[in-house]
Image 1 (tube, helix red, strand yellow):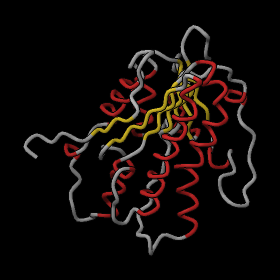
Image 2 (tube, rainbow, N blue to C red):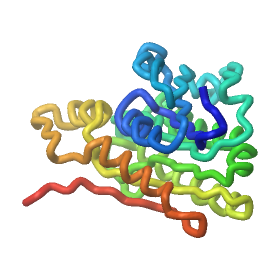
Image 3 (cartoon, rainbow, N blue to C red):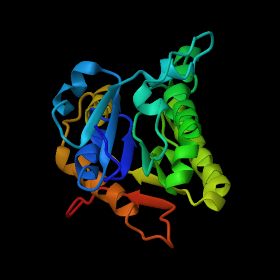
Image 4 (tube, rainbow, N blue to C red):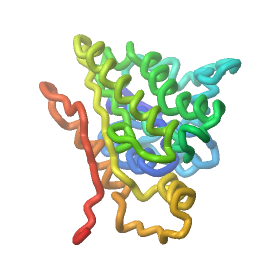
Length: 243
């Protein structure tokens, strides 16, 4: 359980990919509340002395879809008074064109990729202000450029840029820093699934992608800018020697 002796970080999407790698690296300096949807996937963190795992369906919790009813927030989050670092890593990336994306896919994608970060940040804003903390949004190259057959994902990531930029303006007087990180392609289960759907006949080559650990290290670096600076945006691309 967290003690006041260590700064407190909250990381969503903590069970896989960039989120999981970031949990491991942030524990070097913070106690981490690691949020994931599947309790079984959080089991590996149960005995970690610097991690409090929290199983939580964020979309259900914040009633982000039409007609849904909000569930109660775990006491672990509801009772927080200081939050030093909030990292939004949870997300989904459905594969479909504008013409083929149905209403359910639009709703689910915008709910998890935009509404959840907005509402969780709003809930924790008083605690972030007290700590003069930092909010980090894990975006994507899709937040900067269009991409075919990823209509809902691209739209959600562009919306997330607007959310981050607005939050930065609003919270600067309160000492809260806001960062958007734009990873390029990363060797994660999500990336493997996307390639299998979009390019089923192309062999998957992990050497063409950044690793989750490399992205996590870059995320951590944005937290070390010092009290008089903030890294507003960070773009990371894979380095392919000879490519």
